[in-house]
Image (cartoon, rainbow, N blue to C red; front, side, top):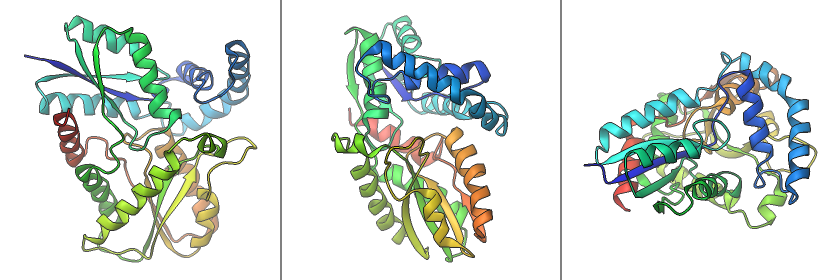
Length: 309
């Protein structure tokens, strides 16, 4: 008998051109992303940003087949977890595209479940991701469920095994690679307000360095850089584009440390856009790891995380 629901929280992604507009509008209208206190003004600014960015962003989506891989990969993860966790009803809620929290809540209500565990699919905590997704679900739940939340899991042993497995898969038997953990960037003003994302990301890199040292593998260097900067304001440093400049004639492996599920920022930004930059810079070999997605060790990690609740 199903006793609890497990809800995977994520940002969502566009599956067509119209949905890209929805994604961008909802994202920039999120007060955790665009910190304008007046709702009307924030909505106007969000609409202006979407108008300026939509067509260019869609050109990028066309290069990856016209849709983010996030939804299909998430569906696979839900199916796999449902097989391994029969005592749970597993579903998902996206922040900026369907299925939204309201849909997940309706599904849970249909199953007549009262106890809900939220699993934000962000390894490190940020107000822009974790808090935004949790707050959105709780707001729409309107106090109907008994809700428990799985905390950031970047220290989880099984999860970090899953990450190492993906890195070693790309590295093979060679020890002459430079490993770069690429994290999604944030404006520094968000960090100055107390967001722990940078600190947790740096901690995570140190954990993974230690864990990789236990494998029969070495790297020329292990680095952290930040991707996805937009606009004129100061963002977290060092940026990935500047970091890549140091590796002319070298071999590089990129691991997307901020993400659990592959999305447009991994399959387009890292694997196409930054690859083109790497080639221009004369990098000898440039590889991008997959996210853990439905990696067997990650499934074990989720089982462990929910067992602790």
